[in-house]
Length: 274
Image (cartoon, rainbow, N blue to C red; front, side):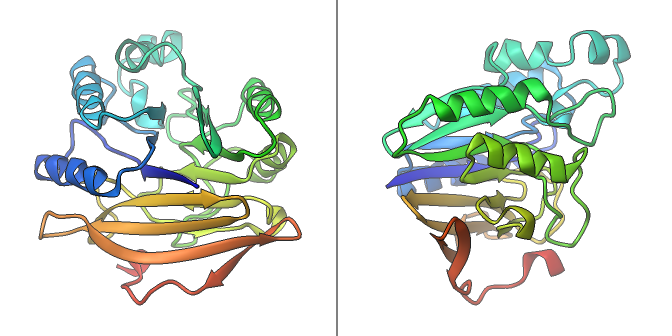
């Protein structure tokens, strides 16, 4: 079994500082094998914001796999945005924009979908699709294959269309690469499901872990546990109590290459409706 803590959209520069210690405390209680950050580490891609983000992530004391989000490229500094959009990200997080992490039960591969030329919407580049396929094909067959990307190729929980260029083609590329699970963010709305057009892939979106840029009443993160053809996703929510408390649990199993929910989520408020 593999256990990873999935967090996203930290937005240093627009964080609720009172949630930093509770999130670290949660990780200490859950004891995941790694922390996955699916983009938007900063609010405005400033050097000081990346310094805050990297210092915070180091405090987990765990392997961290992170990818850029659209907020991790400069918005107003156009020369830097077009000539060196991820220069400050690399200074803070390291040179690799699409890192690979191998755990005992899974291989996680980062995919950089941030597209500075259009600012908000994402894009899966052909080079990234090839790199993902290579990372998965070179890993042992027994490992669960998890792609980590900021933009999901499926609609958000509120029905907003996928904010990535040609989502159908993205799903085809993910299937061709042998992807089992996609971990993403961007929408600030948690959602888990298998798209009908690519039911062999389970897409998991989380909201914002610690920022003030909420689209629901809660900040949220997820603990993802994988074991062969079984996946459990437990959501943890933080509201006015400033403590991440257990939320819904969803169980999925894969039968004949298709992911299916084994039982309905526990009775908690519908986040997308808040």
